[in-house]
Image (cartoon, rainbow, N blue to C red; front, side, top):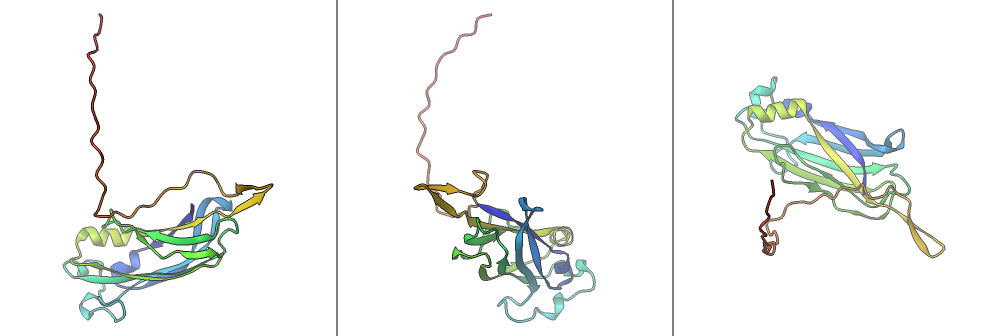
Length: 195
């Protein structure tokens, strides 16, 4: 079930500067629409995700990156103050606009935990920066979704779901081995129309 969303601006990346912060987890439910915080960030790096990037990608103006390869590492460290009734087996997902069919996901933090630790890091590469990528970096953000299972209580032998019902969205990461649908038998009938 979706706990909420957090957003981190990509503008710093167009100047090859890191951006790390504790972002609020926003929801239409919860206390004033806030359901805790998540420590997220990104930083420019070498392809190995450890070293500094090559000197030629440091720039004074974003358009100096056009035609160059850039690497950056997205980090999702931990979350805090998740709702007590929505903090079981939590994880975080995100996607990048230039990879619309891919959803990245942390490992689940098993068990009940209002302060889960994810310790996630993933290096992303743009092989050849274009004007489109510069525009994306300057005007967009990475949207992070925090997910968890609701805690069920037992009352009189019945389990009761205390979280909001049935509005959760399922996040699916595409796979190459899609099952083939069975052929559908078509039936046709002649339909007469009287005027």
